[in-house]
Image (cartoon, rainbow, N blue to C red; front, side, top):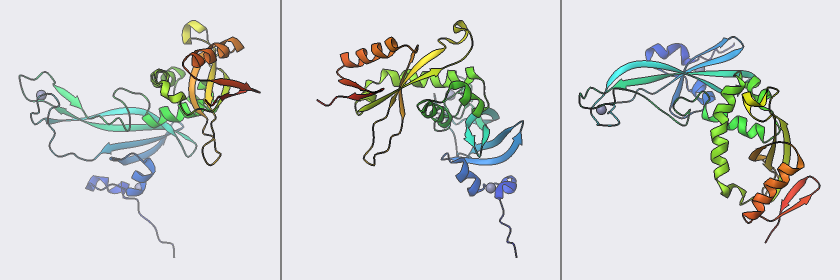
Length: 250
Ligand SMILES: [Zn+2]
Ligand SMILES: [Zn+2]
């Protein structure tokens, strides 16, 4: 006879969470309280555990609960669907008259940065796909968001990566990839064509991860040559071998 297993999502009103659903969502400290399909998206409602007493981050005085605020986030696609996460954030109010904090909201950067429109993992999902030649246009369709939403989330992360020269340290094979970034006017979205530099170094098992190292505007050979020269000036030795570049050993 068929044994029905029971999802405890239906029991959340009694304060229980479903560990299967939480496992699928996969962000520590978060519980799934609802799943639905709406307008071609998988909509997942989540919340954190009920914390004990919460102090004001500025003055430390015990804060009063101030209800919830829903933060909608684009998450990485799941089971072939674009995913919208609805995080029911807890908010509190500082009751100390001399403190200027007022109302404050719970934050968890493992899921998303404050005011971000994408989850942290959606941003890294997109960056890693860019390293494997996906276009921003294709990725934004799979995420179910606008081009601008995706780019505004990805750009600051790429800029931070750009400032970190240590990312070139272990690179021994470099791939170069040309992207058509968009088909709009450059004044709307910046350069149409970009060249992506991808780390194709093999690990000890002989596998490559195709880690995106850099994106530079333009597609001509001069763009690539200029980028290589800048790296060389910073101490990398580079030798071009049929479209891929070997970083020379000292
Ligand atoms: Zn469940
Ligand atoms: Zn306070």
